[in-house]
Amino acid sequence: MKKFAFNITAAGVLLSGLLVTGCNKLLDIKDPINSITTSEVFQNDEQAATALNGLYSYLINGGAAEVYSYGELGSDLYSAGGITQAAAHSADELYAPSLSGGYPYYAETAARLTLQNTGYSTKIWKTAYKGIFNANALIEGVKGATSKEFTQASRKRVLGEAMAVRAMSYFYLVNLFEKIPLALSIDYNDTQKLPSASPATVYQQIISDLEEASGYLSENYDGNNTERIRINKWYVKAMLARVYLFTKDYEKAWQNANEVIGRADLFQLENLNNVFGISSREIIFQLKQTDISPTRGNATPEGYSMTTRYLSPMLLNAFEAGDNRKTAWITAIPGSQYTPAGFAAGKYKINMNNHVVGGTMSEYYVVMRLAEIYLIRAEANMLRSLANKNAVIDDLNIIRARAGLNGLPYTLTDQQVTGAIAQERRIELFAEWGHRWLDLKRTNKASDVLSTISYKQPWNAYQLLYPVPPDEIRWANNLSQNIGYN
Image 1 (cartoon, rainbow, N blue to C red):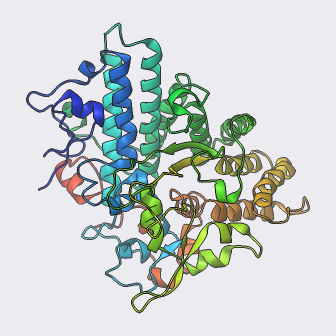
Image 2: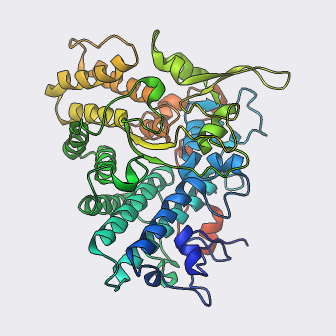
């Protein structure tokens, strides 16, 4: 049985990316013979900074197991487009016009995930846990380091950024799979027999990581973070706003969102065509891909791989007349004798059709942006108190004005405002990081919406969770499978 690991065989390997392969199971990492320990890496600030770069490199560039096909990285790596594509097919955003069983995302599109065909969910699981292992290695390395040349400022930065990455990874795992092990160590003895943790326990750890990280990180985009490619306090605050919304702590969700929006000196909504550009002030955090791909060239992994993914008729019909997002963020797929004409997401302007190998990169991969924070503040504010309805409408109208739409009137009913929040989230955040899929599930609308889609019939609600990879359960038998997968 094939197993995965992160054998760290030399300092250079860990420092350049914390990315290696071996033959142990994903959550059960043993120190190989002649390996170094993480504490040996953290002898000074320079070594620690290089190791931290490796954490980010894996998130966008993958490791040895993911880069065998540069063109597929946007599908295979959870943090480079994998979540976007799988979740958008599971929801009602992406589909295959032919609905052929040979389509890569057929299992997600048709709600036919099984233990024999787990679709892309196994890749999401494996790569997310690799990201978590990398973060855990950094956290343990910082805590175990004794060198006086490793300064307190660098310790805080590494610790805070690693905790935030771990929290991000667990956020997606708990929402997509629910029954997941909570690995907080790289020690084989600690991770070998982990059971499935409750979602409440996972969320508690996510919040703990983010709250602690907030105290360690800079509030600015300076030094080597002028391109917003490193996590700082504002990404953590934005992520806390999202997590508190999902856990129904609406007061804290509103407070954190309000803090981020309040930093007008750092953040502002951009013109629709500039939102995903490198220098966009709407971006809170983005991942910088390498420019060495012989396939993608200067395209982001997702921007390249989404070129031929069809937007569903349901999504296309959901845009209001005159919504400029439909023209700015959607691109045509020309028909041919082999493929029908259609439309694809065009938020990233560099794609399969116009990428240049060795070309200048004008966009990186956006992880979090300001528009979502406005929508979080609006929803949390409405759920705090219906008396806040006018302020909620004001936030929605800021997003709508940027899209060229008329403002919503204050005369809307409470129910209409709630519907308007859902509509703006659907359109503003389409084909981004699984927002639509997660929103349908957390608002208990998923079965109502998806059970009406012809190609998902017969609808089975257990498909709202992805199956825990069968190999993981067979090898670490304290894990439990999600109901419905036999």
